[in-house]
Image (cartoon, rainbow, N blue to C red; front, side, top):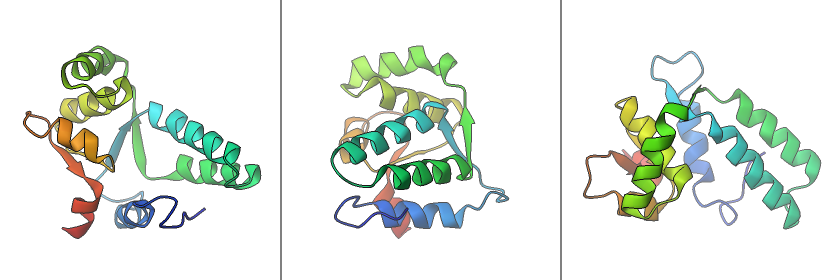
Length: 135
């Protein structure tokens, strides 16, 4: 399922990022395993708002599960994520993503400008998806 630019401003950018990193690529995309649950939750919310249809949401989730992303168990990073959330005023979910990226010594690519802004003066490498796409 493709999103319209009005519905998801960074959908095309994200699609381009995934297309640039096919499953066999030597550059691996990483995310906490909670990524799948967050995507499913977002799809449920979208269906409840009238877009997309349930069958499209199921197809979209099936596509998410095939994306070339290595899912990492986040439990060791949950405590670090909580600390980051409390210290920087971000969500606990975002804190776990930041902690996993730090643990893996990798940048976190996010579409959330507020998250990037909240961590701008820290040691955490959080990059805006739009900026990564331009590079």
